[in-house]
Amino acid sequence: MSRVQAKDIRIVLVEPSHPGNIGGTARAMKTMGLADLAIVNPGRFPDPQAVWRAAGAVDVVDAARVFDRVDEAIADCGWVVGTSARSRRVPWPVATVEQFSEQLAREDLGGKPVAVLFGREDRGLSNEELEWCNLHVVIPANPEYPSLNLAMAVQVVCYEISRALTRVANPDAGTEDPPSDDPPTNWDRSPATAADLAALYRHLSHVLSAIEFQNPKNPRLTMTRLRRMFTRIRPDQTEVAILRGVLTRIERSLARRPPR
Ligand code: SAH
Image: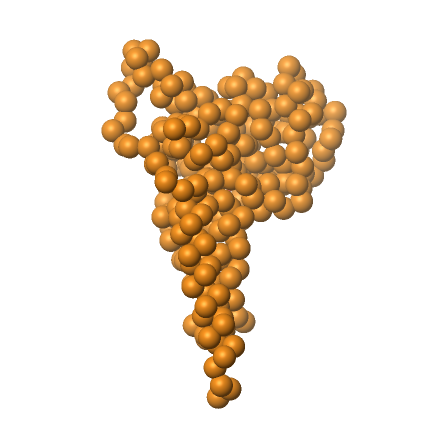
């Protein structure tokens, strides 16, 4: 059994525009014992302001990896969550940062990383990016003004994760929090990665168009709802392979079908 550890947590900043927030994020992470920082398409980076705000956490800034696209930053992850202060058009599974951290600390993902996505300073995460996520995580805040500064949101999330990891690793330490009864998620196979699921969605969407279940010019919310179902049930790699096999069979029998 290998429970999630601090080294497995990847903080992903999606298109941050201010380099100061990158430095602030690095500092927030290092103070809580996290080090894996991924930055997708930053506005200005590298930048002296990132170094200045990082203070003693320049090593985290220096080790940060920059990606062009979100799917590249999360491809190897076994669990992906998105932080958001707002609810979206299709309701998604939502947890408070505390509930999420408690669940995370009890997960066994076979050593696969966990991605925690943070959005742009002005617009947050897009609907499409939020649909990549197994879970949406919210920091409970003032309903009239729930939007924290990006690096401060990272600090709150890293703090809760670090506390939960410590609590679960030292159950006898006599903390004030009662242990949760939720069982950890134990897999006999590895969970599907974000890249496995992305490939499944492409394949499924293609077949749904081929069998005329959806109109490729006007796909509506079918794929969104199916993505939500798959992120909710969190299939393992064998289950995804079975579904891909079924889709391939459908494609083959379509190819054999006489033209109408
Ligand atoms: N105006 C944006 C808010 C961006 S704040 C919007 O309406 O979505 C920048 C990022 O910080 C958000 O994308 C989210 O990742 C994080 N964040 C800020 N406040 C948060 C909260 N209350 N709960 C969860 N994440 C939050």
